[in-house]
Length: 142
Image 1 (cartoon, rainbow, N blue to C red):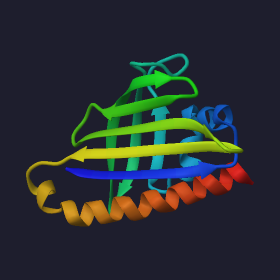
Image 2: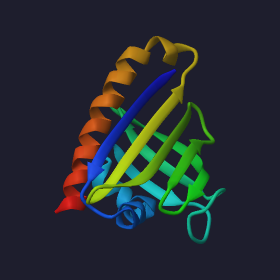
Image 3: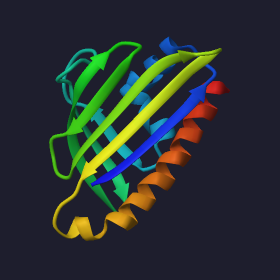
């Protein structure tokens, strides 16, 4: 299993941070490995909304499908992959001082050959995620 958590303070109100992150069209502006993404379910985001993503993975790319598993506006939302490997991602939002405390948690369940590559995969995920959150901070605070 691979786990990674990031907590960051953003100088924007919770409502603005949540709205930005919950807008699927904004993902490619701050996630460096995301090549394509689309919402597969009509309507606003809610529990059960499905999506598709194509991500850069090392020298290749991988496509995943997932769904929203938890959605409480301005508080939290979570996703889980429908395809393998199983990945859950959660975001939580709290007012903090003059902005928002954003907490992110990533969990990937690996098996087979992928389990042997966990240290390499984990290091890459941590590096990319930390960089992506610095990009997010720059975008939201500019």
